[in-house]
Length: 270
Ligand code: NDP
Image 1: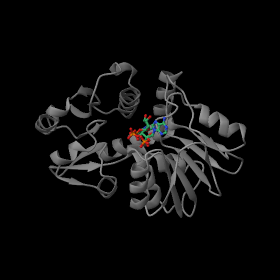
Image 2: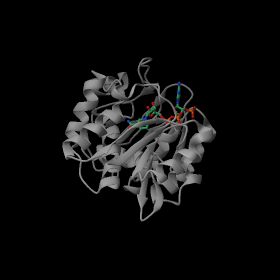
Image 3: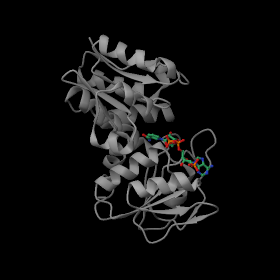
Image 4: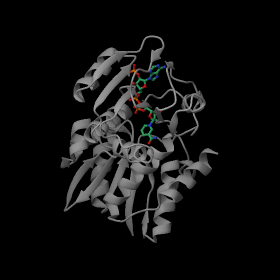
């Protein structure tokens, strides 16, 4: 039995209702893999021991979520390019006895984005400058986006990310009006159930691709508003599924079924 597992910071959701656990286990089953994806509740002070335990038990790798995405780095043997640039790891892979940190969040976003638009040469606005925004901005830059504007409430955080991706920063102190761009991404936590607020943004219109990182609810108020204005929309389930598809590829070298994974998540969020 090979374990391909999850190290997370908390058990806020029972495993059967955790969308990542549910979709990865469904994918393994459909692939006929003798493997499990389990949720382990690891406190920050136990992270080093947990990683040693994963090595000792011969795991092929694991995901890690907040609050471990940065602190896990000190326990690894190396970082892939994206994880190095982003400065955070959400996926660890065993390669020839070395534990390498990957970041599949931004890659998952770009993979989902490609289903509606090729980012190469496009102009993008990213709302937010937290972990998700950082992963998305870095990966979009690597995918050839021609211009990135980071819009954030906290200016220091926003400016730092804008500098990292050689983009520009726009302050967010009131309504932000979307200018002459191709893609707008809500990479903040605004809109997540149960609050379901919406970012204070104007200028959504036909011709734009409007994406949201929020997977639950899938059709956020932000996406509903964008759709009403005629924009093409992209929900956060796409990113969630695609980051897991890339992780499974890293761990197994095989292709899972993204449609099955999406249906599994949709059932939980219905
Ligand atoms: P962080 O806490 O690192 O960042 C949160 C961001 O949201 C910051 O830019 C923060 O701004 C901004 N923000 C929060 N509240 C407000 C507000 N009221 N007004 C303006 N800005 C606000 O979180 P993450 O980046 O890790 O996660 C963000 C969201 O992305 C989460 O909801 C998470 O569920 C989702 N996510 C989805 C994934 C997927 O696969 N679909 C993968 C990863 C994350 P400031 O800097 O000013 O505080």
